[in-house]
Image (cartoon, rainbow, N blue to C red; front, top):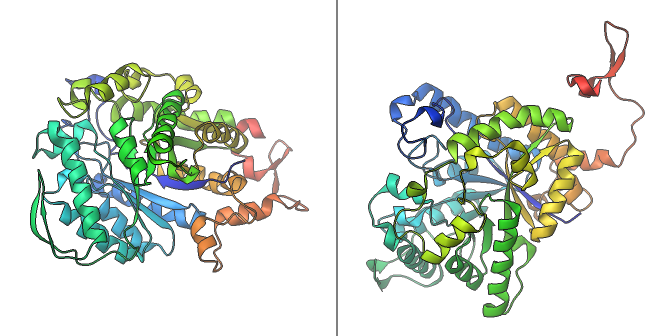
Length: 439
């Protein structure tokens, strides 16, 4: 099996909202009234979100991802930078991926550069930065600019920020969208010249070109496998034909809904209701919300709507079988999940996987159970002997992660396992005793 890096991601959705079928526009993305939000329940959601991510270091994931979700219950983190700062203080060595900031929500990209530099300093140089354009829905929530200029403004902001990271200041920047008389970055990041950058994108050729030019990591958005394969192939082609290199597998990140349980049947019982909820209510969006005029080029919009990609149909109508068969989700026993993961990443040539572990409104205990099974019985099969995450290989101090212990146990035959005698006289393996079919 390929050597993979595993990054933990949770939506942190606010669950106590009406079903979209009971709302006027059949959407919760940008206009769900905030009177539905209870601050006490919101605190519980945030605490669970952060607590579960922090647990990822103990389990031995390679990185933790925070996200920017604005204007609705899809996520309780309107800034990825704040929870990333919390994780920097609560963890020791694991990589922290802030999937945000959205540059167009800043009045000046120098403020984004300052936030990134400070967060990298606070984390001790563990930061990875995602620079998404942002969903079309974000422009309704954030306001402040015409979405027709979003792409040009985003890349000018990027160029100014990179110059601030790489060149001595102060210097003057005079561009189409920004005039900064004294661009002078304080502090500067620990990682020089600046932290690794990922570019989450749906399939725009402009994004492929910029990503390949700077040797950034292309992070797919969740889409059917055939669309992911087409996008990854296009990205490689741009890198090879226009910039003369073949992207390393670690330059491609696949995003997948993942749930692991004791058996395939148990995994479906646990995951299906939550996947249906998140597909029907959270990531569903009306086309006129997702595609504000000018936000996408005509070519990109045509590709999204006709190419079997992210928004070419109402994903809320998808069946569980479609979610699994098309490669949106990887659901099953450890053996099944390993097989499905191997198939997807081998086709994509991806060296990194973002694992969406909360699948919407899943209770915290179920998320942790799936994460633990994955750490102990799935992740070690995609790592070199020893099962150590990337950060432990780079800094080889002893780290008792579940993934390393799971890798060690896989090579051992133990003399006994825990059993109990039940009232009917049957002796069962207590590790799977709570699953009826496994008794």
